Every structure is written in C-alpha cells, then in structure tokens.
Amino acid sequence: MIGKHYILTGGTSGLGKAILKILLKKRVFVTVIVRNPQKLDDIIAQYGTEHLSIIQCDLQSQAQILKLKHHFQDQSIDGLIYSSGLGYFKSIEQHSIDEMLETYTLNITNFNILMTAIQPFLSTHPSIVGIGSQSAFLTQAYAAHYGASKAAFNQVLNALRIEKPNYHVLTVNTGPIATPFHEKADPSLAFAQKYKSIMLDSDKLAQQVVKGMLTNKTEINEPKWMHFMLKLYQLAPRFIEKHYTMLFKNKA
Image (tube, rainbow, N blue to C red; front, side):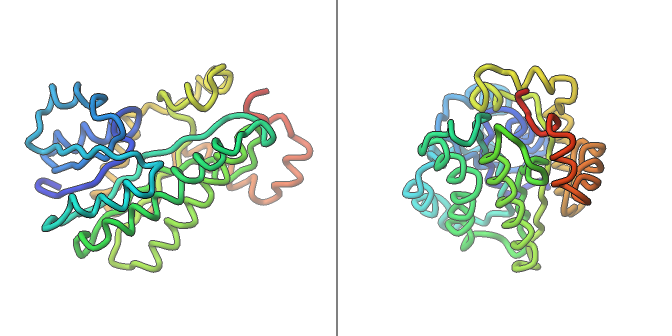
C-alpha cells in the first residue's frame, strides 16, 4: 500500500476517519474530499500533510463533484473509499422532500457521479470500497429511506464488480457503529440507546476494511451474527415481519 493514492470521503468522523488514520500510518497518499476542511485540523496536527491532501467539496452538490476532475490532472488514483452516508430515522410520512432527496443523493446518486468524475484517472486495477449497511437486507420501520438507499448502493457495487472485472470492489455491510451519524439520524438518540450494546467499534472495523483492501475481499459483513440472522430472515421475510413486528421497529 505504501505510495498508493486513494480518494476518501466521510473522513472527518467515525469509520472514515479511522480508515484515514490507518492509511496515513501506512504512508499511503490520501486525498480527502470534505465539506469543512477545519474538521481535519487534528489529523493535520498529528500526521502532517506529506501524505494528506484535502479538497473542499460538498458531496451534495453535483456541480462541485464534476469540477473535481480538475484537481486530478496528471495524477493516478489507486482507489476510492466512499464512507459518506446519512439517513433520518423517522416514519415515511415524516420525511421532508429535502430529507428524502438528501438521503438518496449522498448515499447513492453522487457516488455514481463521483466515480464518473475520477474514472479517467483510475489506475489499471483500482480498489473501490463502499461503506454500506446491513439495513440493505431487511425492512426497517422508521428508517425506510435509509435502508432503501443502502440497498441501492449495494446493488450498484455488486454490478460494478461484474461490469469492471479489473476493479477490486469491496462492499462493507455494517450493523450500527458508535459514530456521530446517530446525532443527525435521530436527535432523540432513541435508536442509539436501544442498540448501544451491539454498536461496532469504528477503529476495529477500520482495521478489517484496510485488511480487506489488501487481501482483495469482496464483502465484509459485521457483526457476523447479524449477517447470519439476516440470511435466515430472507427465507421468509414477510412471515417473520408479520409475527415478529417489533423486531423491525427500530425506535420502539
């Protein structure tokens, strides 16, 4: 990995920031796409800027994403780690139009636009890492649009793996992670409190992600017990939802 160049989104907090620290320790060149560069001041203070570049860009803005190609002229990019994502944990009818558009725009549409923008600069065998969610595999009341956007993201990554056989595509499907994500998703923190005991540690998960990049894994599913239970759920999802409804109400 030493000397390689990766683009990273979502690098100012949570799992993305944990991945960034590991890559910088490994002397990997990382370009972080970030809306607020000041949120990386602590990273700069700790690791310097020899292997770190920062581009200010709002990933909700398609126009700003398309302009990114001007930053990568004469550069080779060895991969993209897309760790950006958001969701609102509320009922379907409570979602505003802006919240729905924001969710799908960041979680799926603008990933595709970013991929298109940097594609001319990708190396022959790039790694594309998408941070998805186990919510892509089940029905979740009060998180429907988040789950739907992650299901779409999962489909796009799986299709990309087939369409681009020279790409290494790693899909990371996670359960809940102890990150600031929950403060925006559910300001009441009811979800975070309910699932506090099974929250994943972002530093440990980041180690798995980087290891998966090194070993060309196609999927990481954590926690493993949750992934196994979801495999069973898929055998009769409507039956299970009908008879065990409370399991699918994440704020109840």
